[in-house]
Length: 185
Image 1 (cartoon, rainbow, N blue to C red):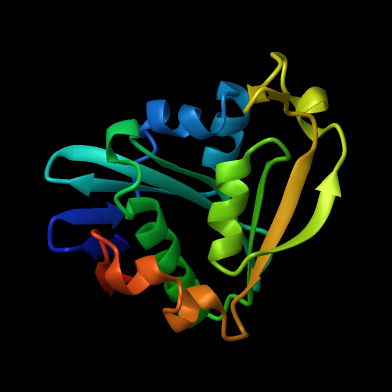
Image 2: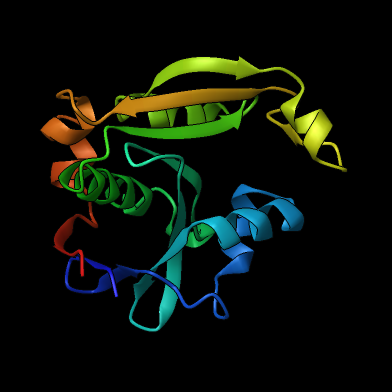
């Protein structure tokens, strides 16, 4: 079992496919069908403090060198505490150690907080997928008073020094929930 430990209190580990934090996953992606699809293809890592799941991420391999972060979410009451940033830092370091060269992500064009989150970590915008959300989601998604239509694709080059991996992204070093250990098992 792969496990990441945050502050000796928070654990991030692969989840049993039967016991998944679907409520958190659906906070970041409102489509139960798409969430189920990428859960079948990837690995889900719930982040726990004690017995409580406070965050989650899902990774899928595109190739041996490229992994996509399909979903990352933190419980609303725990947001702003550095949990998501710590998850991203440690997952990126683990992937780099395993020889992965690129971590990709996609988010809505109206998702201002998510776009800032990724770019502060060193991700660069690589593409725009027009009408992704209107073509793939039955219900209209609206954020910040804007209809979400297009997907912004981003990538983090894990072979280069980046803000995230150099520890210059302040939360990696000084987060309230820094990840301190990895058991890549």
